[in-house]
Image (cartoon, rainbow, N blue to C red; front, side, top):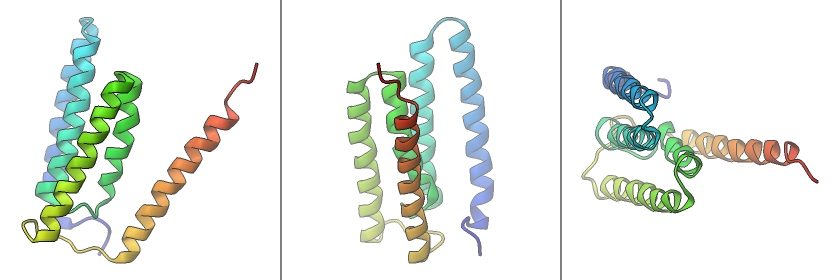
Length: 144
């Protein structure tokens, strides 16, 4: 078995198709000059699609797409504002906590049980991304 449940392929393709259609709508809005609206639609869509995959398709937070929440938080800060980023961070942490609670209490039953090794790989992958980002930030900083 791989890292992806083979029964989840069809819902993932459908979710990706919906995401592409909404991205095209956001691009159309941007061309019309409504950049703020397009940004909000894009970020909200990404959040909802990730949440749908975690809560409905995989029914677990022990998947690799949970990292997308932590990628989305700085993206909100870059595209909107620091205040929006803080609100969105609280929203993402709350979402992950609720999904974890439902999984822990037995309401959500994961479609594919992952080993502890997968979780450790996920953890070190996230740490590696953070270190890589910090290293790139330090080497690309111009000191006056």
